[in-house]
Amino acid sequence: IHQYLDRYVIGQDKAKKILAVQVYAHYNRIQYNRSLATSEDNGFNSNNLNSGTNEAKPTVNNHYSPNEFSGTRSCTPVNYQSSLSQPSVSELFNLSRNGSLSSSKNPFTHGGSPTSSFPFPITLENLSDMKDDREKHRASRILKDDVDRPLKLEKSNIILLGSTGSGNVDFKIIDFGKISKTLLAQTLANYLNVPFALYDCTSITQAGYVGEDVESTIGRLLQNANFNVELAQQGIVVLDEIDKISSKTGHHHAARDVSGEGVQQAMLKLLEGSLVNVPDVKSPRKLRGETFLVDTTNILFIACGAFNGLDKIISRRKHKKTIGFDMLTSLNESTTQDNYTSSVNPNTTDFVNLFQSFESSAHEENAERDKLLQEVEANDLITYGMIPEFVGRFPIITVLHSLNEEMLVRVLTEPRNALIKQYQLLFNIDGCELRVTPDALKAIARLALSQHTGARGLRSVLENLLLQPRYDVPGSDISTVVLTEGAVLGHSPPEYHRVVSPVSSVVS
Image: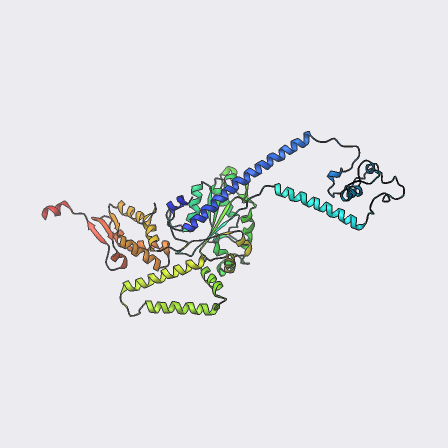
């Protein structure tokens, strides 16, 4: 799984390792639980068959044998002769204490009260002891049955978190319109050949409001599985923008989720495992009007979110015992301002130095954010606005780190559907060749880092740089366009190499 992810996703080795282990364990769990259910069904059927053929004939007297006594009372009266044919409870208790029964089998042979022949008087203490013995016997039998019962493996859903432009848009290979977290999940689904559904949580509303409910996520998964319920019950659902349903995301979400927690509450049973009725509104016409019952127990849910500001929550948690929140905030602001004024001279006219100062500042900020996010805990997500029950259903929290310059250069060139390859194809359609120098690739990566947009900003940077060449090339004699570092930094335009016509060569 890890090797397959390396073909489509750049970097994030730790996240790949966690996903590979958890997904592998998830589908092993499905296979194990299904084989366990099959064996239990077979054992149940065989027990019923044996009980039907080897059923004991009923006795004349309706009573319990001593080895069957477990404290269960019968409402059927016991014959008087039953006490003469089998030991009574008191005699059994005497056997357990003295090693022998009473001298007479019939408790009434010595006349008078039935208790006169007992070697010990029946008191409340003895009755309590007998009750304790029965409870111990029952508890030991329950424990024995529990030990013999095979284990059932539980599901572990996953959270992928990382800030926009650093951890969440890191490496796009199949489609640059997708962020890295969803790309990881979709690549896993493609490799495992299971249904996959990507759902934007910003469109989910609380029950009773206009919009889509939480069950619609399963409907999309069922649709992608061609309405094969058995196949859909093994699929992967990616809940994108999961941080937008938190109770502290602002007034825009509150208009659709009055309580601030309604959507999260509605998702709890869905994540844990429940039966969902899915209407087939987009199924073939002949199946319209029917509903499908989908069990979400074996569906793997992967929640993705940028969780902007989570690093500040972690920082407050780590420093609140030493300097306090107010002092930390003022310290960060003053430090940032001092670094800015010391690194950027307002009177400078050197664009390169200014660019390098922004680059170093962005690199340090990403490194500090990554360091804090690596220490994320469940309580930090709860502080962010997620309810404890929701966080508890995602035991695996995976953090995606920011991209550096080297990784962004790899994103530009190595993927099968890399951006540079896409623009080279566009120029080839017009009979022109596009070349990008190694220094220009590094400059593009640094520019994207300085804009805090990460891999998502690479396309925007290239669009601005190649606008004029894409305007000049069609219908012209330009054979090659060379993008240099100077063109990226704005010092010079892109270089054009034109086709030498035969007429001009003869004249010369």
